[in-house]
Amino acid sequence: MSKAVLFTDAVIHTGRDEAHTASSMLVKNGRIAALDPAETGNARVVSLDGRHVYPCIIDGHIHLLPTVVTSTGFTVCRIENGAVAPHSIDGVEAEVRAFADKQPKGALIVGTNYIATAVDERRLPSRQELDDWCGGRAAIIYTIDGHASALSSAMLKKLDIDPADHSGVLTGEAHERVQGRLTDIIASSVTPRTIARGVANFHNACAAFGISCVGALEGNGDSPKDPTTKLIVHLARHFSVGVKVYFQYTDIKKALPLTKYQKRRRIGGCGDWEMDGASGAHSAAFSLPYRDTGETAPPYYEQEFVDSLVQEADSAGFQIACHAIGDRAIDRIAAALEKLQPHCLHRIEHCEFASDQALDSIARSGWAVMMQPGYSWVDKRYLHTYEQHLPDEMLARLRFRTLIDKGILVCGSSDSPVQELDPWLQMMGMTQFYNEDESISPWQAFRCYTSNAAKAILESDERGALLPGMRADFFVSDKDIFSLTPEALGSFRPQATYYGGRKAKKWRGTLGELILMLLRPPHSV
Image 1: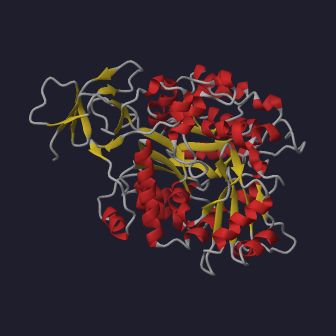
Image 2 (image 1 turned 90 degrees about the horizontal axis):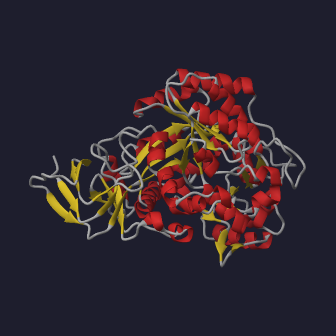
């Protein structure tokens, strides 16, 4: 049993409401024993030197395996000096060649964050171009939203797709339904040293941003045995950061053997649970045609199938999370969820362009919504995907404050590695929303990442506030974040982060460190 610690000389924002604070906090065995205690016994005293203390952040929607192994690839496009670079196919070629030339002959080439709408030619590279740039290697380039990709001939062959007469570009369901096999192919090239570095990078990023827990959406149904999901579950059970896994299988039987590792059953997210794709890939299901193509994309599943899937998962005791971006896709999952007499809180992921009727249904049923406003903040200023692809009427449906005003449980998340784990970018996006009259206050934004997110991952008894009985996960700063401007909120970083009352240490990324981590007692995911 560890000795009690009294953290004192602080402004402790408990998260109960915006004004509620304490000046000291007694921590025993990793949990908060009391606030402003009258008796502290022989507790060790730690002064926080008048700093502000906040409950740690919860990122409820990430993809943990890709986040951990992104060090195996490279970022194609980036924002430099207020613009996207590179902004032409010639520039992309230079980036890809520069990376490929440094890799061993048989290495896979994996590029992420390709921004087609910011490239002059407004397209992905072709199969033939990747073959040339990568010297015939197996290569894949993912768009920034992760819902379209360009593959070389060698990578297509690994997927048993004949490259003859194939452009190499995959969008819509053709892209979504090979992600499990692609993940297996990419993961097969990952070494223990790469995993050690990836695990360390993940922990260090979480501590730097003040994150103590994530909701991890893992697995793809097209991989028969899906070994990479089993791997990430095994690793996550030993992480210092809390991980709550959602299995992305529509085959309930495939998820059941893994539920023994979960404290609560969770299923869904993206992968097989996607009702549609994304607007950048022209695969989000809208009721109005895309501005630039004049075409529409259908939801991936018919209503009858969605109804039966949702009923089966709920009856089996799973909390459900479901990806839906376009209004037709949101209507489909909302209609299925509304038919339930649920045993727990369910979630809709993204939920960007919901109709008024769908929002009323979500509010009436009490579902949580997991959103990423940092993406639209970046898009409005640098990518311009929404304005190029969507009609004005659909852009007007991009809302945030309206959901909160309707009483919907709105949560913030990053969708890492689609975006960096950075919660402060997302909160800047909430306080300076795409449609400005939909912006909210810093306090409301913070709740989306703490108390609201804790409820959405079914952990409100453990996380999301600093109150007696809850985990002593917190970060400290000399700033009052509830008074910051949107720009200052976006650049905010904690001075230190504590897990269970212990200051987070920087991970080194060595094999020895990974082995020691795996020797720790496992916990539920």
